[in-house]
Structures are given as C-alpha cells and as structure tokens.
Image (spheres, rainbow, N blue to C red):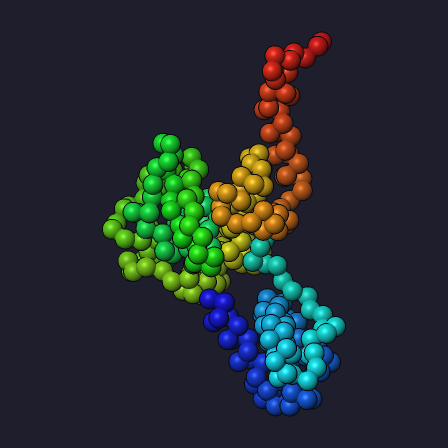
Length: 276
C-alpha cells in the first residue's frame, strides 16, 4: 500500500507541469514549496507528496544523485483526518444507515482497532477463544506482527446475529471479498451518495479514523496505554497519537466515572473506610 501511494505521488511530481521539466540542478526548496502550495486545497495529498520527496532526497543525497537538498525549509499544512476518531453517535449513524456492507466494516473496525488492510483479511476461522473470551488472530499486513484481539461484549452480541459463511467475515453485497483499496473508494462514494450519512461526509470521516475510535473507547473505559497497545497491536506512542483528537470534556467525564467506580472512591480499598 505504501509503495502504491508513494508511486502516485512521484508520478504527480514528475509531470512536466509540476517538477518533471526541471533539471536536478535547477530544483530548489522554493520550487518545491510552490509545488506544495499548489496542493494546499488537498492537505492529505500534500502531506503524502512532501513525505515521499523527503525520502527521495534522503536516498539521493548520499548517493550524489542530488547536488543539494530540495526540501529544506519547505512547510505544509498536513491533514490529520485519518486519525480523527468517530464519536459514539457517528459510529451508530454509520452502523444504522451505511449500505453495501459498510455497517459491518464500521462495527468491526470500531471494536478491534485494526487497519483496513487487516479487516478485509479476517476470516471466521481466525476466531479463537482464550480463557473463555473470543477474539480474532490477526497477522498485521503493515508490520507482520501476529496478535490476538479480544472481542468486547458489545461486539460479541452484535456478531452473534451475523450470518456466517465460509471464508471472510467482511463481504461486498455481491458476496465477494473486499480489498483495502475498494473499501476506501466505495466509502467515499457511499458517504457522498447516501444522504443520511451527510454528517459523516461533512466531518470528513474515513474508515481509518475508527482505529482511533477503538483507542479512545478503551481509554475512556479505564484501560492503560500499555493495555490498549497490547489489545490493538500498536506502539504506546501511536496509542497516544490516535487519542490526541478525542474530546477533552468527554474524556474528563469518563475519567471521573471510572474513579467513582474504583474501590478507593467507594471507601472500601484494602479495608479503608471513609470517615464521616
């Protein structure tokens, strides 16, 4: 997926009407900045182009294929839309009204926190019980890491009503499996054409944002960063990154509700009693 994405950005950069007509001796940060400014209305694409040019520069400089740096000082306003978590209401809206099999995708993504490339590969035979708790075995495509993701009680209840066919859990209406690329493309169309999903369209929500939703849900339920890291299979630094856009007020309410339920706050921790 990364190779495909970077290839698209390099093909854009090499076009004759962008940077492709320039000699490597003529390219300088001012021209790269102008190229970036031309993509300012598409911050996601702008960020992807900037990252691939930085990598290209890093590779080429040490091999004497570039006479000088070309991205020094270049600034962009990159979008973090892919990391914006969906709220509970937005998840419920998508589950109720999304068509073409997206309701099941939203549910599975919001409860497991896995990337789209891993969601589309999940099979019914990957489900395994550990200490009486069902979960699913995943070999993460991006990292190659093998993990077991436990199911939440809400996910267990929802999946009990899903029809089980041999093979993949997530299927398109035609009955054939999804691909990650097809999920992204069809979601944009579904979000645009399904009027009931207009709030999700206006918020610019993407399927990858449900990975952040899973992190935020677990954090508000009282799970530590390490526990979230173990459950979802991401680093603790990435857990913090995915949680950074969560609503502070809702986080605060969740924190105090968690504290209200602890033995200490009830005055019964290790035999300790509240004096009145």
